[in-house]
Length: 357
Image (cartoon, rainbow, N blue to C red):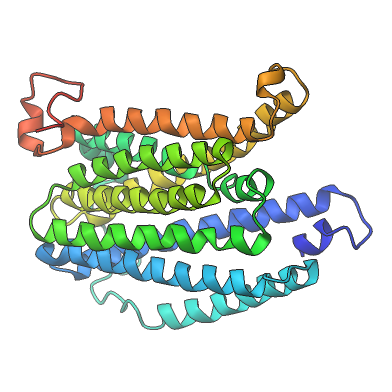
């Protein structure tokens, strides 16, 4: 309904469409993060510790397979674009999502026969007490900081990447829609590689750090595609964003599982999901605001004749993402190849000195 109002074909206050679209994104984000965190905790409970890396890779692989299929389908359906067709596709996607969720959740988790009756005393520690114990370690705090920085770095482009392709590189609606599938293909390749590395005893923090390194190359390709006028370089950058983000996601998620102690699976995964969701939301919103602000300043001539192009606002966001990726490497470096015990005795509380080894 927000799309119908935003299309301009109906009468009414202009702000209703914006409020409705914001509410729609809010509901999608809330549903996505709630399902992701609870689903990962359930999968971790069900999987033996030795198989958890393989389970994580499989779940993310299926997620990306779905994104490839849906992204390709949307690109084909929007080859001949019209506002009515876009509205119909969104309506159809909503119905399909509802049906798929019903099938996915049906009898997924049995009722707990050991649940305490109403009024019975529960000796489970309070959440604040458990969280204080979990977040009291330097390793956990550094890990969550790395998750926040890396997530922000890879997701700030979320709402500006497709407009960048359309406005700056003159790609069609169908071509920009296909970018989702390209990014998912890159992530799929990353998950396959990460799964093999983890099954061979690879370090999750090193995998996540390598993802940040690939992210640096990805955003360099995206930035250079505009002045060089090379859409294929832009597409390569999109694939590398998916690849780097995939390595980072699998690495940090497996690292969160490694932080679990005494069966408290939901705590570390919940912290990982909460930090990721918060960083994602703030970065996506910040990326859109910064793009609009800097682009307005550039096109208004406030930044001088050399910076009056429409790509300036997009480039500003991408350069911030490069900075965030460097900060991610600094944060995650001391975690590479380190256990919680060795971290506690580390003579160097901060830095990247140990990362290359």
